Image (tube, rainbow, N blue to C red):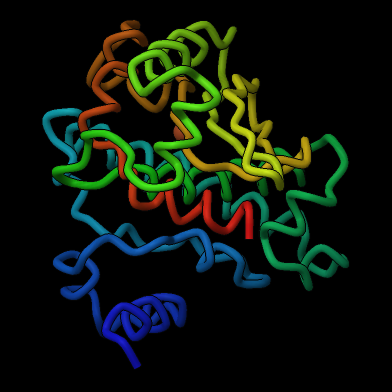
Length: 234
Ligand SMILES: [Fe+2]
């Protein structure tokens, strides 16, 4: 078994024995962990809460991860206990739920796990490989893509998310979506997201959403986005 597979498998099992490895190892995708069934468990971060500074402070991360994200899991478990949704993977709950509290909490639980994966300490730079080629094809180039994704994310009215998503043919689309909405509800595969709920940035940036969105590109995890792109077109 490769080291990467071992770490991923260990993390997916939710073992508390490898906390040190979680924090020191190369960041691993979290979202598969979020697909565990009821009780749905908030995946551990693969980096320390201080590790994304100065983009996000430890205090900002603490409120976002420990308070907001954790609450969506707590609410979801309370809502689905004893119901058919409790037997589904989290992603399926998101895909199947009608508009309402179950969808809102399931989607917010899943969206945030995905968001944590989209960032990494010492991230940034530009995409490589097939995703870079697709960005060039569909947006004209990285700079044009970044400008468009930033602008559309900043312009989300109220709370929501700026998403980069792909269809099964690999065509890319920037999707600014409100509240808990996700490309999963639109037949698209998420590749990247920026949380633009105020709770994501208010500790560090107050009302300055554009400055927060600008900083996101300094920690973006393009390796994760590339993996999602490969999965989308597989
Ligand atoms: Fe959030």
